[in-house]
Length: 373
Image (tube, rainbow, N blue to C red):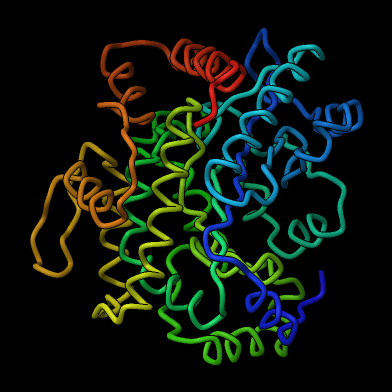
């Protein structure tokens, strides 16, 4: 998609605060072996119309993404997403496929994965080479409407320090390449730490500064599509949203819904604070990166740094502070996805047994009929 920076201002001028779009990425699996299988095109091409509008491809043929489309608010987006999930899981099962929801597949060999055939992903594969090949990861992305590009940039700036907290809460990928990586989010290490223009962005301050950055990338041939800017929080110039992209996909529907609700509340809280002139100082990237590593390595079992006070606090307390600030009405299980898997690892369960239980849990929760709130 060509980059039209002038049009972006019009898109955000017409945007509405609090619209929501959800995107969840799943691994396509052989139900007997739980190996990843390249069946995206088959599932896409046989999908009924009511499902086809909600599924899209990602980098590899053994991955499928389900999207809500534009919801007028969180409740609307969740209702759309829940319906699309039910259709997707039923469709996959009818075609002899299972779906996995963890940040990485535990044992898949990235060297055997096949890229999907689109112009965008051919460009990604050609330009990034090993970095693209290595990226067999699965995420939750949340879009929240924010009116005005300067406001959207300010919101992104204010969300930078909370990205590690969201990552710790969402971590669900202790395995990669057939080994226990000793991490809580191996997805973040293999994707966010490898792709260019990825991870925690600089604080840009306003649209004029961000635009100059994009103009430099365009003029130097660094990007030809805006989606080649993979920051973990970014203004989406086509949708008029702030998109939060830091999270591992969630093993259960309830965790995914709660995480989405927290992100939406955080985006809107950042917008309110900006509008109300609440003081804010942009932390140095190197300080946020300290918390990013803590989230990757120890997740909710670890501690994060309170950057205002220079003290450490349990990750659980950091989450509680984020919930209080955002005003989100959410609850999370005592142990998140990575913690549950790590407890099973410590108990001596085999990798395939742990993943098998996760896949069953995912099918039972994403595929069930859930009452929409």
